[in-house]
Length: 210
Ligand code: B1M
Image (tube, rainbow, N blue to C red):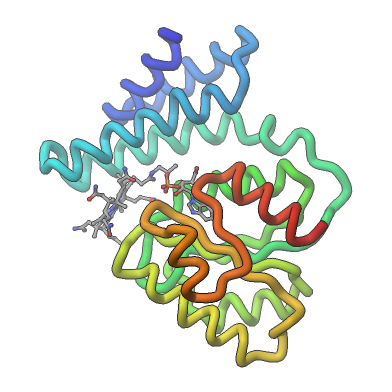
């Protein structure tokens, strides 16, 4: 769809206002939020990611694209949250220590909230103690770990080990995700679930808590 391609291009070029306008227009035209998300906003971020990897663009351009994507996300967020039903459980989510990427994690948050879960987002660069403390304080059923770097995904294993050694062992499930994370890695560290994308994360949590 042309309008979604335009959104992707504006995300890639870091054009906040254009992204906001076109996302609003999509909603008026009745285009579904998952289409806007996946074929517009995420598609634009994927393109800039490839150019970043090929050294065609650098951190400032990527940050501008990330900001443009976030401005679009803010508009569809209320709709992602609209179907919220009485809480089905509490999830602690964060990006692990050393990792500052939060766009994917935020989408996972919206999906989980949209599916009716209470989501406590502990942010980026989160140490294992913070996950455990938050899970204890909020009586969470699931801890969700996000990592975008192959150098930080190994920290997920440390979180798993800390959870196993803590008082909340056995009462909380841990799920993992993020671009470099795989099912094989999740199995290796003993995680209770893995998802490659935000809707998958929501499905896994429903299965684990249900
Ligand atoms: Co970074 N970065 N970055 N970056 N960055 C990547 C991840 C990279 C793949 C780029 C590349 O080389 N092609 C590469 C990682 C390579 C690797 O380790 N394998 C990389 C690198 C190297 C770096 C730096 C080291 C660069 C440098 O400084 N030399 C540095 C590290 C900083 C740090 O974290 N300590 C860095 C910095 C940055 C910015 C700050 C500039 C910015 C982050 C801004 C922000 O997040 N606020 C940034 C960005 C934007 C990217 C790319 C371009 C886009 C990431 C993104 O937001 N994607 C990325 C390249 C790429 O992915 N194409 C890249 C869109 C988002 C919707 O997708 O995050 O994958 P994603 O989330 C998905 C799924 O992964 C999944 O669901 C989400 C939605 O469907 N998911 C989960 C995520 N978490 C989940 C949890 C779950 C389940 C599913 O369960 C719990």
